[in-house]
Image 1 (spheres, one colour):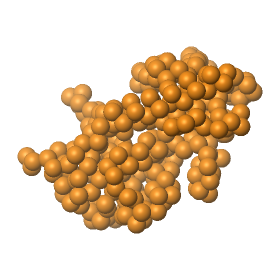
Image 2 (tube, helix red, strand yellow):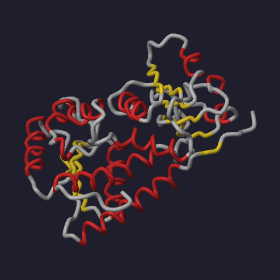
Image 3 (cartoon, one colour):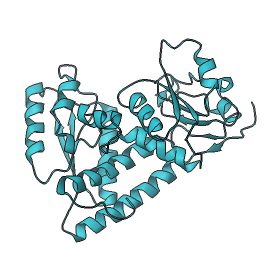
Image 4 (cartoon, one colour):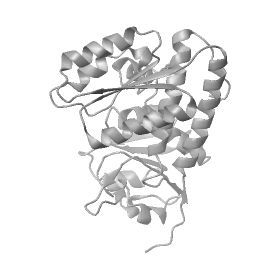
Length: 293
């Protein structure tokens, strides 16, 4: 096995610093009588979703955000869910609303996303939020891509003029990731399942962001010497082991920096959800962001 030369980007440590900044911001807002409030809606009994919702509740407690979880049975109709979202949109105490995905098959996820008040869309998935990002205007940035940018910043690399390759084109990660990289003046290539000669394209990248959901698809010899590798994928193998979309061991022999799975991008997503909730609380009230946020 090749000797690792890459430095590992510790997402847990970076996320802890982000949460500490958010906690200080929340404390500052509480002194002004403002208590940011996040409402999470979970429909059904999906085990992974249950875990994610508990983690989000724990993070709210840690930073001082008021977290409210609405647990709805799998039999909840689309109309019933949309009615709840309408109520939450109108509640002056609610700053952020998140519907945990996936929703049951009888509910249209696009209708759910469209029903959210963009001002409370702390996931950054609403078409308005994505449109603001595309227009390079201030707005809610999707949590995972924003967290990835922070991890890239931890390496000290200046993205201006760098060749960046994003593997994956989802609205949750791939497309907004490309927009955030462009905002930093990187030259961005977005790859997907129909990209020809994918390995050759990835080899040109000084920054690689893998977000395809296929275990260890990105091989070590695809990685250019000295590249920064951000692995968004979380895949469980037959033996129960969690791995990313990148062959971590092989890629580590060529990259300069790389995120592990687990412990890389994952913790950043929840940290930036907390941050987005505080930002939403400030924007809705027309008050300045607390220092250090």
